[in-house]
Image (cartoon, rainbow over the protein chains, first blue to last red):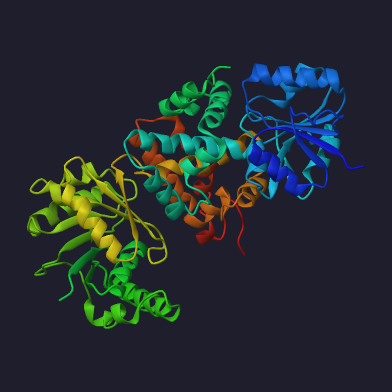
Length: 219
Length: 282
């Protein structure tokens, strides 16, 4: 019988995971997600109270299962403390998984190799447990910088064309924002702001979008 | 007769701009005070155009007779161009007096553009007091013949017609113009800063190793990771742009230069050009 992976995240991310594994990939929560999962991927960035509650629920229902949890808005260390050893947690950057990058960055690899089974076909790179990870730490500020030009009245197409043609980036900065969602970018920026300082303060347009979507900046 | 473009400065950028204009049928007068530099630039343009023709990147018709359309000299005396494009070193103490002189020497009908990558266009046009409205920025990217983007920049006093004329010129040269505001770093160099600075900070903080950092970004579709790219561009060049943006934003902490870069410069490890930067090149 094949393994069961529960994924808590966007439809795009679920599709990417499905393409990488022979395991049965199920979104959570869903009617099908009743069997005990072998691995859980929690790609959510916030609100943190909801993330913590979800991990609590998982810990109660499926003690000791391996969980790959997004650690770009809250340290893996904190998440491990939340569940007090009831889950085998390993941190990752969900944005790299969502774009199906060749390499996924992971934290806490040495303590929990079981969750690596969810990463078939991916190379992985251990990194220190730091808010922002590696990829998100760069991409979120890129989007933030580009939003300043939107605020100055420049058209998104022009901004992205300049980034793609002038820097050879695979996507324009605003396209990254579309890919991950501006409110999610805001959550990463705010988490980095609280940890590393005011240089990460989300642009007012990002804060407005978060408010529009009901995503609390400080949740 | 094809329009005349005067390009001032025959370094990498100046000769690249001249090559592109010649390849599209324009007449070019390339200015450099050093005869040896002019000869070097002429050879570089010749090989660049030959290469582009061989690869089919240039049309035979437009490029035909390019050598007859190119003149070189130490000054611009007696010439009546449509455009003057400045591409001299990135120092205001050089650009300022040059634009003051150009403003005196050319009539109001001549557009004056700076290929600056980081100096405020408004500061440059402040030196052209007679007709500041005909001064603006045309920021080409290196290598000019291959990079499609040109940032078109209006200073505070630039006429809207400068933007229209610039965009038309840039399109004639087969490139893509994007009008950007006169802000420190304009658009591309400003938005790009986190790619370098956060990567430097992460490595310094021990979040990730330098090579691993490059691999992560290359694995995400970037043609070069930040450290390999800084080595290619030149660590000194990259540092100077960061420093300029930092100073012009009144020391905004987002753009604070990193001492990992500064120390590489102190050691003379400037990247590929010195065979040693963040990596070693044998």
